[in-house]
Amino acid sequence: MEFQGYRRSDGKVGVRNHVLVIPSVVCSQGAAEAITRNAKGAVYLPNVFGCAQVGADREQTKRTLVGFGTNPNIFSVLIVGNGCENLPAKEVAEAIVPSKKRVEYIEIQEVGGTKKTISKGRKIIKEMLAEAAALPRQPIPVSELILATECGGSDYTSGLASNPALGAASDLLVGAGGTVILSETTELIGAEHLLARRARTPQIGKQVLDLIAWWEKEAIATGQDIRGANPAPGNIAGGITTIEEKSLGCIYKGGTTTLEEVVKYAFPPTKKGLILMDTPGHDIDQLTGMMAGGAQIAVFTTGRGTPTGSPIAPVIKISGNADTCRKMKDNIDLCVSQIVQGKETVKEAGKWVFDEVVAVASGKLSKAEKLGQRDFCIFKIGLNF
Amino acid sequence: MAAKSKAIVINEKDNVATAIMPMKTGSTVSFEVQGRTERVKLLSDIPMGHKFARYDIEQGTDVVKYGEPIGKTTARIARGEHVHVHNVVSHRGRKEGA
Image (cartoon, rainbow over the protein chains, first blue to last red):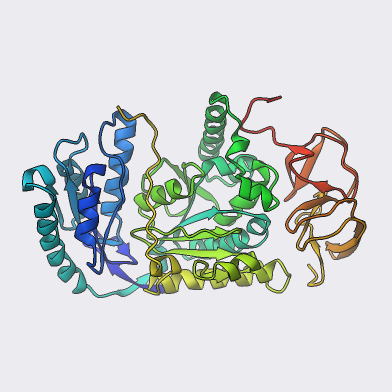
């Protein structure tokens, strides 16, 4: 099976063809936004980090920004720095060069102020947008797709309908040779044994169990109660009692295939098939991590409703809650509430979700894209100094 | 599952069922488990999406949904009673006894 995508010089395949403007530091976010304003096809990242960071925390910010730059949905990249930050624009740009796409950088201090930076940036992206417009879509096997899966605003319908439907779609994509990323490690607590059992090797299974043990230890070490955050108050109102219950509904998203690899936050998978990325349960942190890892498209299941979108990729929203589908129809792409009523099978809904993934990958706009919803948030693992 | 069911049991091992519409104390809810019809008289109001007990569940034992334990009861729960945060606790991701 094929979709219509963009083949990049490094062989990877995009489902969108954006010109991306990355502020390497929060100080240049305003200029980056101004450069992309009213420039159709150009997007920027609302990055609030990039300075006063050290060690693994700095590396994670850099890896995430570079991952967005190298993501195959991106045609070319402009990095905008201020000039004195400890994550310089030049360093981010150089790390994107191996992807063989055009990458440039400018700095506000060097160019001489915000107005000149905006004017210079606009000139650069005007050229990039003209180059991008010349690249046509072409037929590409669906095996090139990396699908990010995610759930948020969960309620009882998530585990009954939308997550199983997405799981059936995940199985179809993996069956066709594609890749599916499951994430939100904290929302595996109570279900980790089921996933570990499906690991390709005992070592991968152990990695799953070790990750859960680490998150649980971290939660306990805060001296706080994880129940204050997960399940969230809305989850509880929606009928979810414990983190275990939420997790058991949550892991349906990844389908039933063998777990091939565990990757750290914002690292690209090296295998095809089902992948686990270690991320928090925080919706935007995890979406950002998977996009930085090279996912071109996401399916996001929700019970209570959520507006989430990505600056660089389509996010298809599905819900099994009929009220939410009705109340938030400008946000929800597919309604699978018929499963709850027993009027549709999970398998039928899964095929529908899979077909929607192929259609959206080929250019159909997701509702989050139509709304211009562009969420971006890096999983911060250290203090700013 | 039958289209007329007002509750869902996901796995036959489950000792709870999930209401797919709001239901009142004293009403009898019928639903299908593995093709057999089961009836439970409700001892509490059950909001949509919330759980009630299929059987009496002793204090300090597992609540089972999806065929897996989702937490332990903090009190005895009678068949037909609401099962939620007021009588179930998770032991994961926090200090025991906290």
